[in-house]
Length: 224
Ligand code: CA
Image (cartoon, rainbow, N blue to C red; front, top):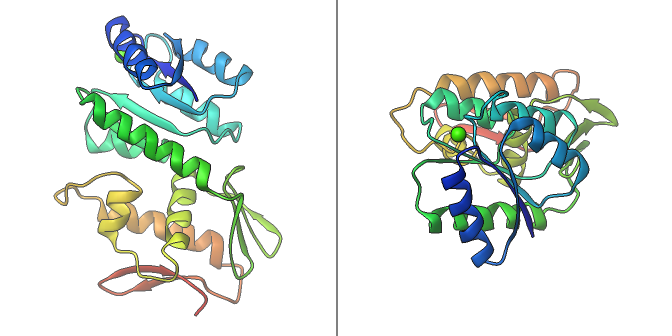
């Protein structure tokens, strides 16, 4: 398992390198976004730990670069920024998880294991009726027609599909897709907007509607 650590703070980077190596991981370290992008273009990593506050280009640019190239390597953002906006932004751009500094090392290890498990256990394709989701290429099609989703819409769709026809509440989406546990955050509108865009994209041009709103409860993806 080869992990890329993108971190400009030498102290933090060394702590991560040492801890991860002791836990059996191989690590590569990049100090800046440009260097990280070059390494990612030339090597296959199993996971990326990404600091956002970097000199020069922001860490978010690394994430954009990766996802624009359809590179689906799991990315965990590690940053001192803990505002809801920053989290939503990071996850919207296709990060898999988000950990706010300072964090306990065992917590990081647990998140890494969970992300690696998710990325390994996923078969290449999930389907529902004529909807097809390729988990590796992160592409979606319906009846053979390609559908362009944002990273967050894609993650929501996969989450809804994995619910296996069960209703998914806004709280579940906030917790598991946006990774935000606090119920005080005004995320419901953000979620509703994303669901509405997702529905437009996957259902609008088709007779068979798959994404349904269950009033007052949440959403369900199923063949009615
Ligand atoms: Ca930093």
